[in-house]
Image (cartoon, rainbow, N blue to C red; front, side, top):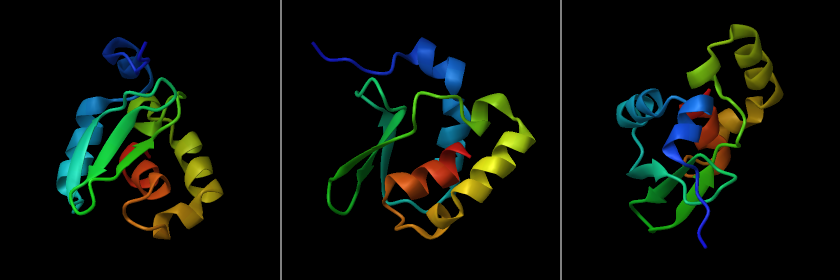
Length: 98
């Protein structure tokens, strides 16, 4: 049996339309989809290597809750993620979910 993030659950913790908008405006060379893993929100598939990168925990992100204090705390706590390799879960989470 395959477990995955159901769209109705995803919409309670993230805003897929906003994540897609951010993805389209960034210069990622790949595709973005809902993850087929129950503990991740999205999966990025590299256009260069075909590698799949699952990212986003099952907790609400900024695209959903819009809490500026939580955003500031996340950005401060994970500042190193900003300069992580572009095709990494850290970079994708930092730039698309927060």
